[in-house]
Image (cartoon, rainbow, N blue to C red; front, top):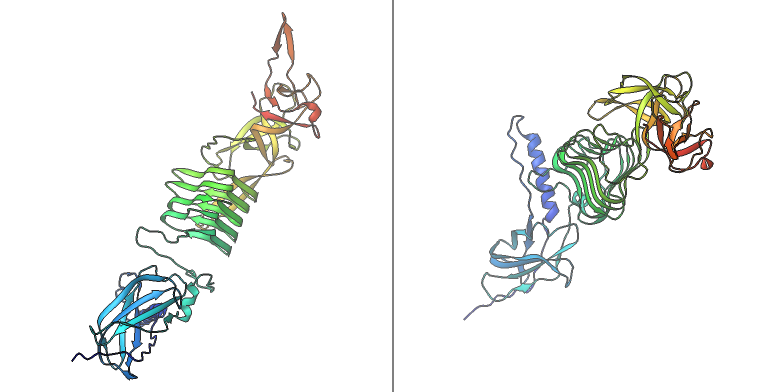
Amino acid sequence: MIRRHVLTAVSVMIGAMLLAGIAAQLLSDHAMAQGGQPDAALAPAVDVGGTFTYQGLLQQGGVAFDGSCDVEFRLFDALTVGTQVGATQTKNGQAVSKGRFTSVLDFGANAFNGQARWLEIAARCPSGSGVFTTLSPRQPLTAAPYALSLQPGAVIAGAASAGILNLTNNGPGTGLTVNLAPRGVYVGAASLAGVQVDQSDLGVFVANARNGFLAETARENGVQVNSAVNGLRVLSATGNGVQVDSAGVGVWVDSTTGGGVFVRSAGTVGLQVQSALNGVQVDNATGIGVGVSSAANGVVVNAATGWAGFFNGPVFAKTCTGCAVAAFGINTGAAALAPGDIVAIQGTRPGGATGQPMLMEVDQVTQAGAPVVGVVYGRGEMVTSVGLDGKTATQLVPREGAAQVGDYVHIVIYGPAQVKASALGAAIAVGNRLAVDNVGAARGLKTVDVSGVQVAESAPTIGIALEGLEASKNGLIWVLVNPK
């Protein structure tokens, strides 16, 4: 006669859950490391994986079972019904002693993502007898208390000198991946660097987000990448590609073989720095320092106490409206130089600033025919800053207002600028080439009639009028500066 065994009552006890098991293992390793010999060799880093240990208690007819059972484990995302997560784990011939058993389970690396999980168990005892009995209810898998700091929305706070969260990936993958979020990476306040990447093929990469990277306040650098193929790369952002509200240096890339900062597509601004000593600083890039493929505004720097953009090398702009090329000089004349003054070169001297080989010595034009070099935009100021690498950089930065005698002068040498204009000589109309009169103001180029042909006078010119003298404000008119 075949004897049938029926599980009349089964109770299951959760002895070790997923994150609790991991936390216990980490604590054990930490204790061993502290208690070992000082010269003990460190074991190579090994991934924890997705396995965890489950302990339970099986009773049959109210009595603890002894022998072997076949046990099936299924993981679900709900207490009842729901969706199964991962594959069914079957343990045939599971040893049970006085009702107690231990099984090692693995539902895959992606089974646990911070969302609640329930374990459904079915058993038949002894092994190979009859059908499986599904135990009810499903058992909730709960986390160890410290593991709660890794659940979605959790906040990790502390004062760890080595960093609150450190990611090391010895393989070819990514250190931190954000697939879809309103903000890819958000840094509210950082005393040093908002995000720092010392060395990687790709420093920070955002595929698709509303704001690719946002740093609100950082005492030193919003984004710092010391060495990477691409320093900071954003493929697509519906808002701003990279936004730094306040930092010593908005984005600092020390060395890249690809691009320092690359933004392919942004709905509004490719790179925006609200307030910084230097808006964007790329020290060494064998490719492109800053590249923006498609954006309503390529790069916007609202307030920078240093350079909004400083380029010690060639600059390429495919299309540029309202661009101007400027240089620095020193006022070696006898009076202050105000914005709009036309200046002539008197000589040169060593620059003194980082990447500044020489400075022009300039004075206001006081006679026609003087060697005009440009128009005063404002004054300059020498600023010294120290980077995180300890290197000191001295830079000339533009400032508003007049340049006193001996001051640095910020001069537009090509492009749109407001220029002092004179009513003397020929009338000034849009498109007229402008010469310089004897009091240092722009005037219309004179023409003479030679046998019925209008011939322009042969005189040095400052540029082309973009508006007539009637549109002048405070004696200034817009001119496309292009000294010849």
